[in-house]
Amino acid sequence: MSEFIEYPVVVALNSSRFGQGNPRLGESLMKDFLHSLAIEANRPDALLLYNSAVVLACSSSELHEELETLEKAGCAVIASEESLEFYSLKEQKTCGQSASMEAMTAILMRADKVIKP
Image (tube, rainbow, N blue to C red; front, side, top):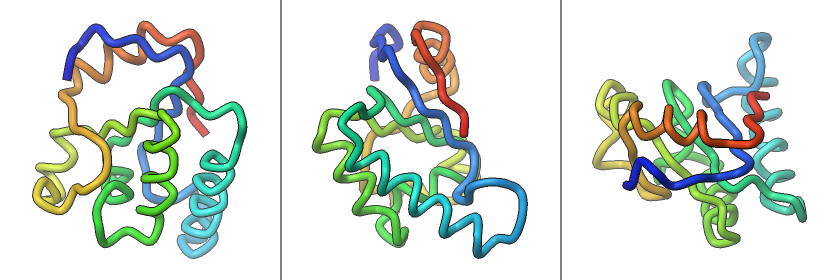
């Protein structure tokens, strides 16, 4: 992955759940959020996944379909290589691409807008 790709609008997710409260609610909210992004006319240009959010890009994720829809619509789905390795998920990632933290930092720093829900 090139470190110099610019994405004007970036959504950064650091968890497989949305928010800090009840885990079941957090999973439901993440599903609703990704579904909403997938059908939104103004989609982000890139979706960065790091820490436990990388599980969303794996075939075992219930939200895999939403990420594939985003990707097909032109949204780059980018998972942290270090996070994939930490969670032993490198072989299970089936959606998007992986990138170093250096590349992900460059994407964040060049973005016009970073959304961290």
